Length: 408
Image (cartoon, rainbow, N blue to C red; front, side, top):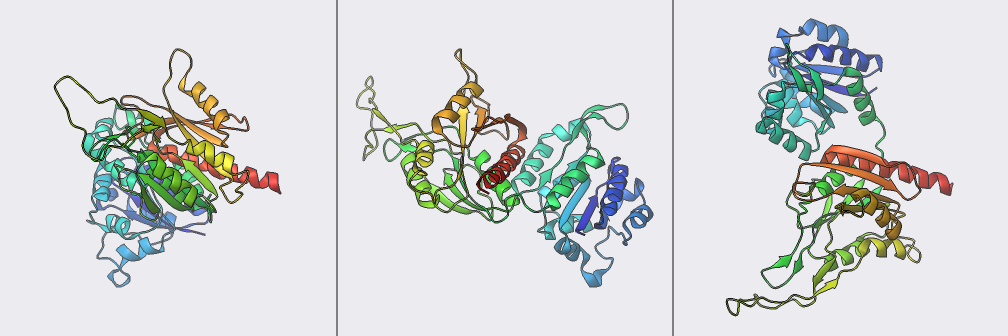
């Protein structure tokens, strides 16, 4: 039996939370229901109490002797917010504690799953989009919304997903973490190759996908070391973060920290080339017409070198995951080039995403194909970068299990 907090915010979809409550109780879980003050206009406390078997209140001044707004969050194994209205998302993103539910969200350190439900215009409003991103960056998981019939005659994205789907996700979150006890090394961001003390050659990578991978791996129970290459977003709390600059720096850091790791995920956008010479002073314009000629040399192929080195260094990770930021052309698609790269590099998995202007780099969303060296059917994922990261981590856990089965 697990202790679950079921938060219910004031939307018409609150009636579906009653069905979710029944599923949770039938599974044998202890459930404390915390409605926001206006939920009683949709579903009364008598219903929540009858189905949960526990007293229900939205007031922080009830049961003051047990400090409910802290105790409930501290004791919870999982916190669900179903439905999560635009108002609740805004309060949670901004750390407000105006009632028992929002106070509990601040106090808990348990995993949090929210099921948004609102009209399409509210879901697509820039404020809601920003709040969702903030919550995702903090590790809050979201499920939905779906697209379909809303209140009245409206239809579109914003419909709460069905209770059975939420129950399935909650059950998975309460299970043994997929990567419990595993050590994962992740590279993230983009390398910068210095030209002089001021300028560098770089790329568009913000590090968002690598940070999301670190977050998803930690959520799955792993101990994470993050080699951070010039991130534009904060590194996740709880990871060991090592700052890295150029491709040469990353090469050294990977070989220093990879031994003893269970998995290496090479997500960083590593420059293929670097200037042959780094000027010791700023490159100046000598006249109005001349321009410097920059000679480039190849950077080390870190992914291929790690894979090859395992033949003589068995302490290197047995599972290596590469990333391919590809663009299609007349000769082939991004996936075609990804398959060729997978074969060339020799790693066990390769995640392919198509990049370009307004695609992947610097964006909050991504779409990727996970390719496997053993020829298994590719796995597709699309959505927020955290959602894509969770799919990749699930495939990493599956690959570890497959390796263990082969060696047994």
